[in-house]
Image 1 (tube, rainbow, N blue to C red):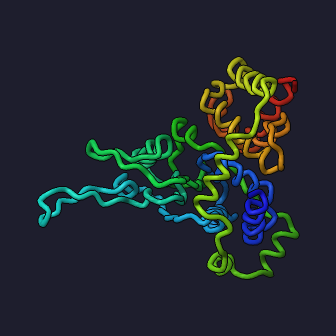
Image 2: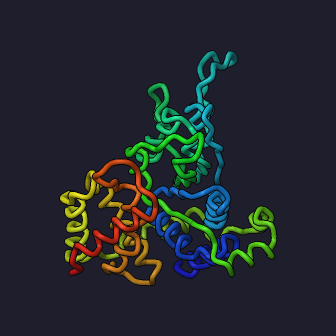
Image 3: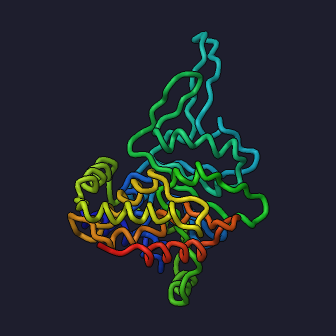
Amino acid sequence: MLDKIQSVAAQVGSVVVGKQPQIKLALACLLARGHLLIEDLPGVGKTTLAHALAISLGLEFKRVQFTNDLLPADIVGVSVYDRDQSRFVFHPGPVFSQVLLADEINRASPKTQSALLESMEERQVSIEGARHPLPEPFFVIATQNPQDQIGTFPLPESQLDRFLMCLELGYPDPKSERALLEGQDRRQMLDQLAPRLSGPQLMEAQQAVGRIRCAPALLDYVQNLLTHTRRSSSLAEGLSPRAGLALVHAARAWAMLEGRNHVLPDDVQAVLNAVAGHRLRPAKGGGASHRARAEMVAEIVKAVPVP
């Protein structure tokens, strides 16, 4: 199974060049059954990465371009009266897919953004008192532009907390950018990709992640990290229990990608910035850039001793 997952990473890396660390983190996020947020400037490959992941994992996916006039019903679906049946018939929206590509999610209004809360947390949609389960596996891979750009609505903390990881791609290094300039069009390359995993195989891999062992001392380390964020005077608030669970799940997935059946402190540190960075705010108020988040996480790692 690990060989197949590594082939997924290699195939995605052939399209999104020079971003192997981010690709590995994205795979760890999905193996941990989490949702992924990719935040960066337009044009650096956020949507391409999301497309390549969905295709390579062999999942059914739909893309929604989030705009300021998008309505919640455009995502979850709507009930329409059918005269022939003399009743309302539910027409499912694009959220009823294994992967929802929410492109530029922060260009939609907060009301529309909130339409994803239930589906991301409970993997179901409730409409007019009826519960509609979503397919398994189910992921939201969302992209967003920096908050200082025109026409964006900041994601509320409750929405951000639903994303297990937040990644930044950044500009490519000179060698990768040259390969990008000389290479084939990325859209054509996406059309040529073939699935490397199936849905059942991915779910089997997710179950294997759950069997990765976490020693009591490792869980002590995670708890100490959480406690430090809650007591730190430099942070507005600490990490939630949901963030702690996300950290453990992500560390288990990272350990599996490293070929181990147990989690090390190095695994926790490898995923900590992606898991915790978007959940932390400085005490002085305002938002934080990716660099500032990385510095906050580095201070946390430095302050908490490794068992």
